Structure formats: C-alpha cells, structure tokens
Image 1 (cartoon, rainbow, N blue to C red):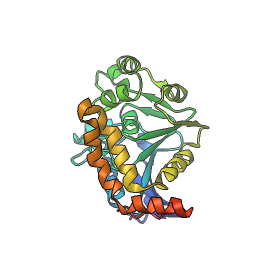
Image 2 (image 1 turned 30 degrees about the vertical axis):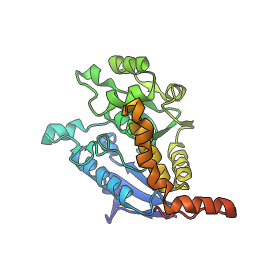
Image 3 (image 1 turned 90 degrees about the horizontal axis):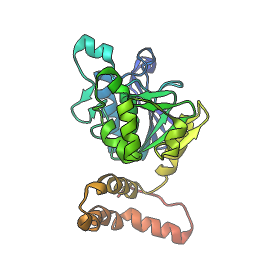
Image 4 (image 1 turned 45 degrees about the vertical axis):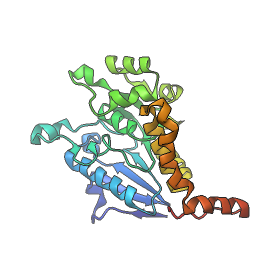
Length: 266
C-alpha cells in the first residue's frame, strides 16, 4: 500500500515528495527545473521529513531519490545568489541531512549525476543503489570551491583513502560500476530501476527488529572513533537495552514457534 504523506492539494508543486510504502518512507527531490538542486526551503522540508521518519512507530527505513535521469546537482546557486540563504537547516545541517542523518536506515536511489552536494547527500545515506548510468563526483575544486558538505569527511571512510583523495583533488567523477567495485555502491541496476531496487532493499531492512537495526547503525557509525580498549564497553551500552527489550523476547519466541516476529519497537 502506498500512502501520500504530503499535505498539499497539488503535490506536484512541492520541492520534496514524501510517500509511505509498506513501512518505508520514500523521499523524492522534485525540482526538475533546478536539476533537483537544494535551496533552503527544500533543506528544511527534508529535515522535517527525516524528523517524521525517526519519530514514527510505523516507518522502519527510508529511500531518498531524485528524478528518473538526475539525482541532484547539490546546492541551488541561483537561489543563493538571489537570497543569500544557504541550504542549511539548523537541526540537520546542510541540505537538511548531511550534518545529522536520520537515526533509521536510509537508502539513496541514484539515477544520473550525483555531483557536488548531490554526492554528499548520497554519502549521508547508509546504502546506495544506482542505475548503470549514474555518476558520482566532487567537482568543487574545478570551481574554486571545497566540498564542505561532508564529502571530504565521508568519502575516505567509504572507499580507500588514496582513491578518495584522487577523486577530491581532481574533481573527476566516478561511474556507478567503479563505485560498486570500490564498495561504495551496494547495487548497480539497469537505468530506471534504482528506486525499485532501493525500496526492495529498504523493505528487507524494515522486516527486522527496529531497535536492533537502529542500535546496529549507531555502533557501526560511531565505533571507528572509539578508543580500541573502550569499544566493547561502549558497544554494550547501546546493545544492552536491545537485548533486554520486548522485541528480543519476541524474536526468540517467533523462532521457537516457527512464525514471523511481530515487532513492537520496545
């Protein structure tokens, strides 16, 4: 079942479309006339949508996508020139996501170019599914700028550091196939199929216990910064509430009774 969450009489005019599809939120950047570039309004809308995702008891995961042939061109420079406003949400940072991604898993579904801020938005997601023709790059140095939306911070953690350095310093884009070879892209699918594949992946994640999924995401995201002699102790602080949850007992009962679990998120 698909339920539209947007509250406008004409969703086609909104810069961000939000749907609920069987427990998965689907966020679609919808500014084709601006190559899905992000202005302040769009950043704030995405931030609010991510708040709703994290607060909802019914939503377990999300997909973030763009147009059928273009993910996002990043920052809307025309809007910035006209208003002086950068697309920075006070709660979640640049583009409404890169400073504080959602607590729940989010999958980027990328078709066509994801360049500059568009790539940084994809890097803020946990997983990436891409069409064969997708390209990823940080061309800021070609324009006298620096990739300050998390690209230089996240890319070296997702691919070998020397290759991330080459990508940043040359500004040269990477193909979807190359990104998959480097482990950055989880799936490469025929062009036009990224959203469906990303939704299938998010739906698979959404079948699992929500507390366990969220705790697992936090441990994997934060543990790289923990001192080695503190890692297991810090991990235990996050895992013990999951281990003692009703969902953990339900998982054991469902396994013993050979039935699907009924997760409550508590």
